[in-house]
Image: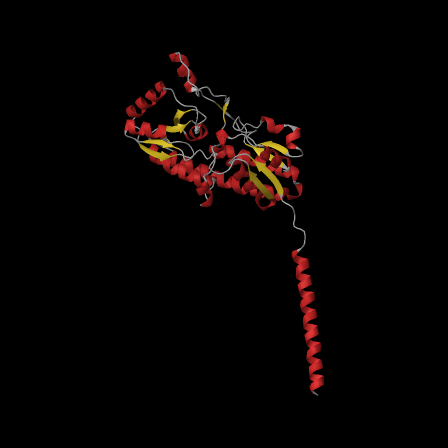
Length: 322
């Protein structure tokens, strides 16, 4: 009797072990199923990276060449950047003369990557070279004053212009991954609705503003000013290293005093020294107005993005323009 009982237990144990082995085997088979490979998109700067992520969602692997906290005006592509581009399906850059990408658009660099200028269908604003006019007027030159820009490249600061950039990104992703066309279209439409809401917030807050001019570190906010009916007076030019002449600094100081400017805007990625000097001279206070050319590492860690920073900009614009 005892022997039969032992045999019964042994048989049951064997069945249990066999069941567990088969079960484990089937689970292993499920977890080792090949995953669908994501589309690799290499982007230059933060706005392009953010917009591609919004449209591509979990179907894309997005790389940003200009690291968080870096000043994008100073960026030069490296050999490592070229390797990244060559391994991508899409190389997305903003364009409008912002990034130095001419050397990256050759076939030997791109390989099979599709090059996409996301601002290609955006109506561009002509660049204004106020410093150059002043130099001609006063008969002298300054090392950083002459800028190469034909257009103001900062189109991403206009939410309506961004809607067009989102459509361009959607078209590019669809061209290389047609089977997910509906997914990209839905993501693009969802984000463009958020941009419409952002535009409406700006119009609501800035309609009926009493002041019409802001003083900024560099002249990055032309699209924003053009869209919402105010003007920018930049201490520096379209690039933050386009330093002002002494005459221009004197003129801006005089303007601030005459118009009783309460706030001078500075930026998180460039030196606030000139803005601080101007504020001290005129009794104005300092406020941040972010051109969103790049995010700091801290901003990235805090989960900030294009929409949240545009919201912060609106709060500070309202403060300065009321």
